[in-house]
Length: 241
Image 1 (tube, helix red, strand yellow):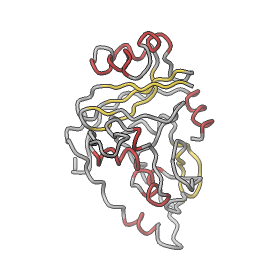
Image 2 (image 1 turned 120 degrees about the vertical axis):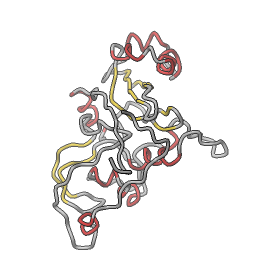
Image 3 (image 1 turned 180 degrees about the horizontal axis):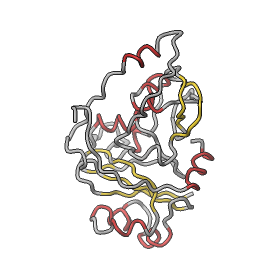
């Protein structure tokens, strides 16, 4: 393993066909290093593809998003041929989830999401900076989550379809990895974890009995599962239509 890699023991993605349909309707071991690792520089082929008048059709392995390890299984990218608006390359995977920018592109490939090209070129973000746990609304207050990793979530990590604007959970001073959608049955196995139980029992604004009885993967009250990239603890977010 080189300095740019780390292992993540992934849970199975929790996604259903109805979640994918809702996404389309909306348009849209664990690492032990306690810091963000810089990503490798673009390959020579990628650099050539960005030169004026040069279009790339090379097929490469899509990037893995450490803060959204199940992005492809969850349908955050669709199989669709097109030319990426950020790198002008012919691609087969198109980003489908949220992107906040004045000028919104029609087609973004996963490579331009992962390396920050899309966010830089269109001056946008995939997740709201203020929606990340540990980033205060008041700029005079201290940020209590790792800034570099939070920036990666905002600018280089796919968002996820939600009823309201997405919220990104944090733990151990770092953003968590978004795993997928959970319902009232799914959450029972995580209730032995103190922080997760606190989320369920009023910590995220819903009464515990409501989440235990009515939380769903794709209904009017939806659950979103996160996992700490440092210690492996799970966190919950939920919102309603």
